[in-house]
Image 1 (cartoon, rainbow, N blue to C red):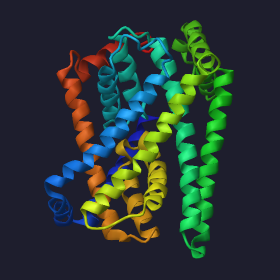
Image 2 (cartoon, rainbow, N blue to C red):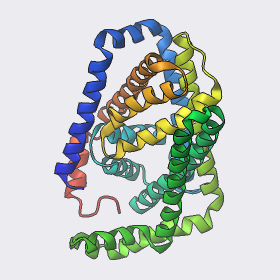
Image 3 (spheres, rainbow, N blue to C red):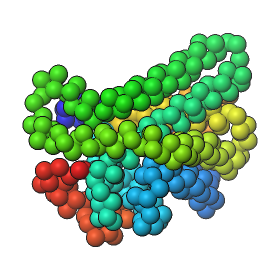
Length: 340
């Protein structure tokens, strides 16, 4: 995606988020955190558990031996750094994933193994999220009134699109995902000289991805199940925040809302942190399920605060490590093939 378009989308996201802040008002934002007080720290617990479960799922995508000598806490730290970069820099996830591969190489994991695991991880996440959205759509269908039939069909349509994307991912990977993407880009008129020079390595990467599904089916199933478990557990955060703010929320409502907040989070690939999109989506979902715009706005504010804390922690861990962001970027830019 051209830089100009990325910056345009970033500007749109910042504008939408600015509108959300202006609409909410700084006094109400401050009031939300004051209402939570020190109990607001409890809000960090559910996502910490979710992130930890996701890290277990991520490790499964490496198979039984690749991370045998890499401690769990090291992968937890690397993944947090990568996600912090993804959530703050408009790189369509490329920056964060490249950082993970780079940091894993420093622990002795090959670039091919890390890159192929990144693809498998996204595939497993897509399957888990599509399943979670379908479950959320089913709960919404039973929960919402007949007057919301259009919304129910909309949710069902989103779930269907998710499954179509999942099927396409598998189909592309059988044909060689990286090689297929290279062919598509070449059809758009780009020469991709570096891809031609590294055709053997690209083939090796594609083989690594495809062989995993046949050789380590158990690990891929466990990876997908773990991601799904994390998605489901994330609903607890909504219920905890609502409770701390004096409202009680039904679990099935929180489940359905979290499923479609995840859809809004998908804009994170275009706009860091899905700025604006996530916030207004949360408010809309709270209104749709009968909890009102005020509580929805409060939860959106709290969730955004949680995002900031975890992103800041990721950047802090990067700064405390042996490599800086500037140094890592320089190494990646000067390397002829940083991921392989």
